[in-house]
Every structure is written in structure tokens, then in C-alpha cells.
Length: 91
Image 1 (tube, rainbow, N blue to C red):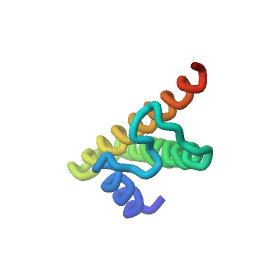
Image 2 (cartoon, one colour):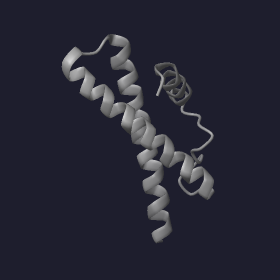
Image 3 (cartoon, rainbow, N blue to C red):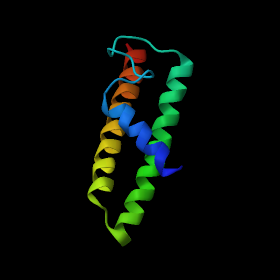
Image 4 (cartoon, rainbow, N blue to C red):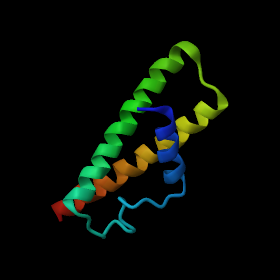
């Protein structure tokens, strides 16, 4: 993924307003929205793994560390939303 694209995703996500995330855990989302969440999670996780691998050899700049933290927070948000969706299906 191009570096510029990841920064756009992170900048948009940093505002904590995202079109694919329900406003509350009880709000339902469509199958298409769920697929978008899963795709975003997959993309961010892959990018995160690459950054971790590269940082082991070259370290991180302050900007890269900030992006790393923002991406980690977004991954955590996505996991929470997906978990809530899965557990709400069980009840």
C-alpha cells in the first residue's frame, strides 16, 4: 500500500468518525459494511506487520511511531466493533 494512502486512512480514523462503524454497539450494520470493516482490519494489520518488521532493522522516526500508535488504536477499534457484532449474534 502506498504510504500516502495509509496516512489518509489514519488521519480520517483519528477523528473517530468513520462511515463503516456503527454509532453504538446495538446498531446493526449491513453485510457490505461488515466486509469493509474486515477488509480495513486486514489491510491495517498487514501494514502494521510490515512496519514492525522494518522497525526491527531501521527503527522508527517520531512520525512513524505516531502513525504506528494511531494504526494500533484503529485496529483495536475495529476488533472491538467486530467482536460486538459477533457476540450480539449469539444473544
